[in-house]
Image 1 (cartoon, helix red, strand yellow):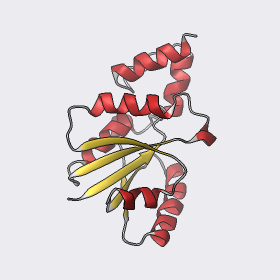
Image 2 (image 1 turned 60 degrees about the horizontal axis):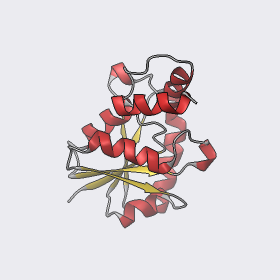
Image 3 (image 1 turned 45 degrees about the vertical axis):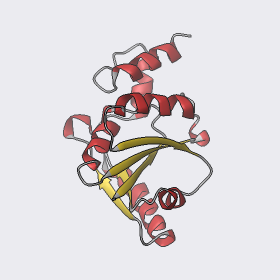
Image 4 (image 1 turned 135 degrees about the vertical axis):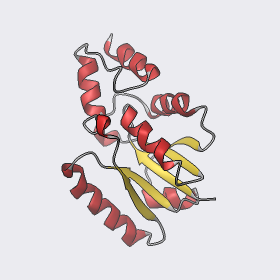
Length: 160
């Protein structure tokens, strides 16, 4: 079985993340969406909330599993889950330098695990979790960027 992990903070998960995850399913038997604790990013949603949001989105796809993780290297998480690849998303040239460094370091730590880069479809290339949160915080409509459960969760977070 070919397994890949797709690590990220997913705060919140967007249509761009969903697009990448679903396209990765065409290449792998199983894709594990790995929700990182990411305390340094000061997330809006808790890890449990982010996991619940992603699980709701992918509940009908048996090839996708959603897990949380904290305080471990991504390559160690990949090994623990028998993954042969780490999925990463690239939106713009600005993402490339960081992702290239990360992939190179991961290759140094685990030469047997490949990094695979996906770009979201062109209609989602500009969507980021940070921008979605900013739009929602200011009362804008985020329905073109996130699923209904995420839209509702954002509205709830910003209504208080």
